Length: 224
Ligand code: NI
Image (tube, rainbow, N blue to C red; front, side):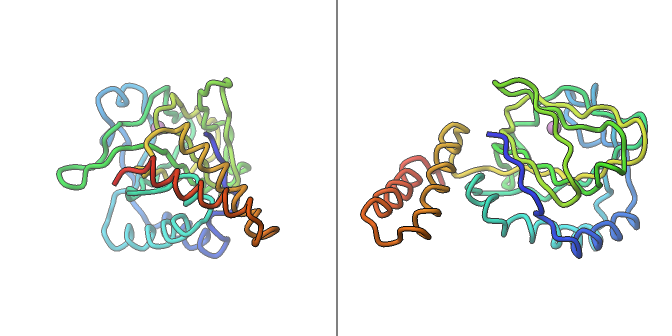
């Protein structure tokens, strides 16, 4: 399931993130890429200077992890600290799938869901679309600053070359309680129905059936 969430980062936080990123130092993104991705990756990533990085993460992740759509769609078990990437004219990231296992040692986790938070407005740059190949064809994504897109980490994707301006994004990955993307999608749809029924018909027997089935499917399919 490919899902866009508008307005994950409210304007005041977005402005603060922009101010912090201006102060940051960026390095070649190839340094953090696996061998396969190095061939196709051309961008820059924020150097993780501790004070600046913590301030950015508190703002960005604080908004993302509290977002109800993110929670319902991802069913997160673990989420990584993000990368902050920028693409200026001539930069791109060719076709790749994200690494299946992220982190090191005891902090290792599986990437089930890839998340991109857009930090530039579409008018700030030309090109730079995130193109995700799905079973329904290619999806071309270029969202407003503060919006996010979630997609299965198993998807082949690339970033078109930026031809003008600057594209800034935060990218992160979550391990889900539910590994299978098809099961997550069913749970997400059932959860939407349940939320609506709980508001519109809180006392009906059908609402209880849907609500209980949702809870028991999460129990059946989740792994801890
Ligand atoms: Ni990627």
